[in-house]
Amino acid sequence: MGARNKRIAAGGVAAAGLAAAIAWSSSAESNAGLTGRSWTLASVAEPGSPSQDASGSGARIQLSGNNIEGSDGCAPFRGKLVETADARYSTDAVAVATVACLNPQAGKGASIEAMNALLGTENFSLTSKDGRLVATTDDGWRLVFDRR
Image 1 (cartoon, rainbow, N blue to C red):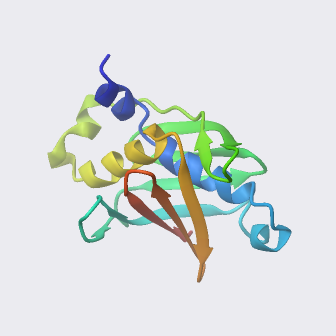
Image 2 (cartoon, helix red, strand yellow):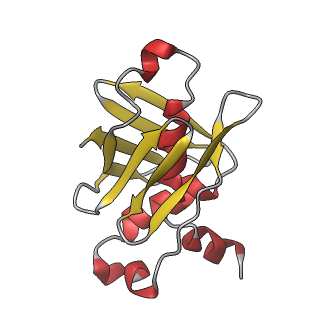
């Protein structure tokens, strides 16, 4: 299985890693209200491209301590968040997307590709502002989640 296919098979892992990263924040204040909540993917942006609406993708995440679960809009995932030495995050969550979900006509191509980018990267940053969670991968993908 090639690297790209492994990233695609990882499906919703990106969202999972993002949610878990928030739960592991070193600031108790920033954790308030983040765990035990569901978050839905609102928009995605490829490196160098404007944001695309992803609100209808069905992608979601939920945090519970250092555990994360959810869906990339096609396949479920569950895993743990890992904080790296440089205060960035990764996840061991795994989801298996079906061929039908990867079909661009399914209308979920951008959200699944963005989730794969987040899950397939070694490190990503996470910020919380105005009730939204923003994850940015080392290679420039940006995923924005809203409270559900």
